[in-house]
Length: 234
Length: 234
DNA sequence: TATTGAGGGATCGTTGAACAATCCTCTACC
DNA sequence: GGTAGAGGATTGTTCAACGATCCCTCAATA
Image (cartoon, rainbow over the protein chains, first blue to last red):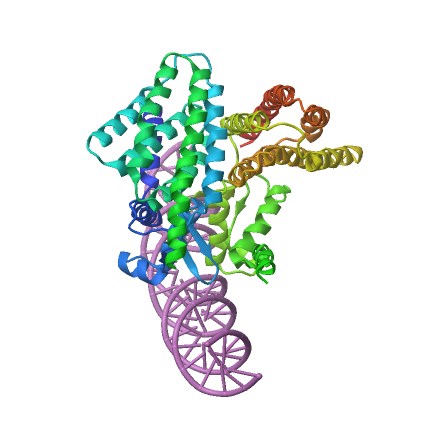
């Protein structure tokens, strides 16, 4: 009986996941991720609440969840807006990524490492590239780096970086040439994976460091141009 | 005129007023931090709401904010409780600290560094120790490490670690011998500061690494005993 | 023409109330 | 001693209402 109960305890997470606010935030999150709500969009309580058929309180809780993930910003008495990243934000995101991701690789113990999920992310990227789905490739890239962080085995670090990656996606949605932005990094992800497979975490760290520096440069370049255009259009 | 306006823009943060829920959560956060509400305390909606004179809805909003910060946990139909960290939580906190703090020190550029705030935290610790105020010394220790992280100059990293340090304080409140827990590290903080002053970031990183390993060991040791007692008492 | 100020509509912030669902305690019972 | 059930207390959820704030419009003024 005892082991049956402890086995059941694992299912509790599923049972507790029935919150309406979480489901609403899931919907909004994917809408934002797919660009349906572009950065800067205001999400009105009445509009969204009416469309989804949930009460204002529930919706506000969903907003709060997404605000905590930095996908929305909340302005008092004005409502919530899809976050618009500044170039400084993008730079800070990469600063944090470089700090944490490199530290994770450096802090890996002796090989071998559990790289199956990392390899799966590379495969996912290959499939996306083969199908010319560049947005999907961007998602796969993010998965790769999330799995990289997961190698540290720290729940908190995972959560910290998850929100950073979610922010990064906001930046990706502003740019209009996803292929130029994501394609070069597929090969470099594979390269990092190869280095880790060989047990060369030092080499992997170096690769990662230049990877992030290059990626930042490119994102900022494209991003700055895009933001400039938007500002001119306003 | 233009430069006056850009100068004014910096004051906008001050202007951004806070909602009632935020103010309530500020109050509760500092109460929790100072140990007024020890871990495990149940915060009843009626009790707190009545004492603070806010409605249940507003209070629940404040609870949600703090739950997102991991300071409270929410049990369905039972209410919210001040979080009780498990030993695994403490270990994960230190895992994250070690990862990030060491990475920050390693990632410092060429000296000299802006160490005034770090030095101020050490001074704060000295004053607390001189006054035999060991809880205050724990706070000063946390300040030291927060300022250490701030050297990276990353807004996101700062915020990430702020919540980790807030959690850590929860652990500190469980132990009953704060002197044994905090006193040894005052000298070691000063030592790290000295290494950084000398521009020896490599040495500082090594000091920090052993510091965190030792601190974790001691906290876990004391913590495990305390938690064991509590479990026996229940 | 540009700026200022008043007014109105829309939206958000907060409260209070209501009712359902759940938990906890205490009692009665076997 | 252990169990079942009743009752009270607390939380979960929704709704309606009102005040506060923001934004837009428009007229008055320099």
